[in-house]
Image (cartoon, rainbow, N blue to C red; front, side, top):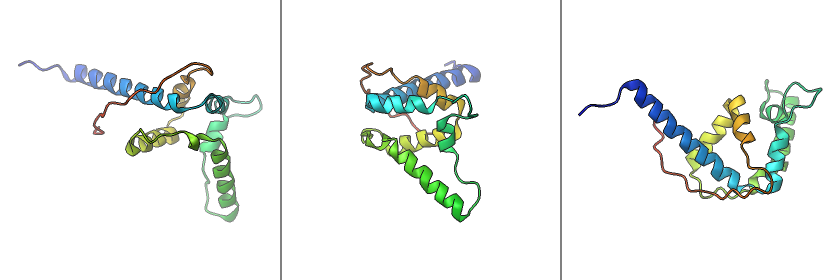
Length: 138
């Protein structure tokens, strides 16, 4: 039996991963209300006087360990909580996948913004889809 070459196999695996990621984003987007989508969209805008988006500002944690930095971190956590994203029912998504998406959101910059821009426009009915159980191995 003749097996495909390494580069062809790598492309195939990349395609499957991208498809799974797109389904994951579609599922999460389907769980959001119109208001939550609008809030996420507003986080991506960069004000003319600012150098970074609101999302990047919220993602940045404290640099030093000090009282003022801890207070700032708690205020930041309050701002994040006030966004209302915790109201989405993600019980149908495995915990490890949510943790993976969280890491992706903290580490990624441009990729996260591009994925978030794919959020359906308000009024667009994006129904949640089931996610295939793809092994986590890399």
